[in-house]
Image (cartoon, rainbow, N blue to C red):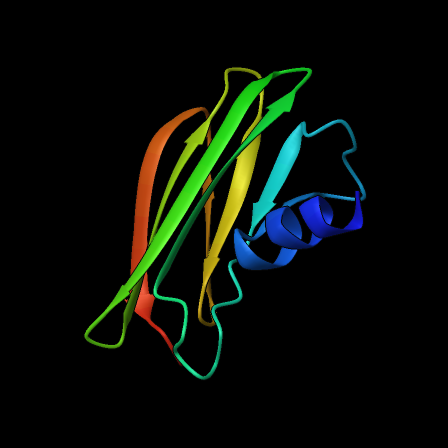
Length: 99
């Protein structure tokens, strides 16, 4: 439903690349609460390629994203203004919360 989609897409930051549907390429771009009321989140999403998992935490002005991408998929993890392209596997990307 709409609430689940909001939580996955905006809070956890999980989305599919519109140019590569079916979660062949996953976009991970968490949008933490600017007021700082939410300091962590996680989500799992079952796709045709396997489970995509993501979690993020905020500590000392740093946003850290952990993501697991299934075989046969790739991802772009965006933290602040920096985007990192990754393949299948487990990855961690950190950067300034507002940068």
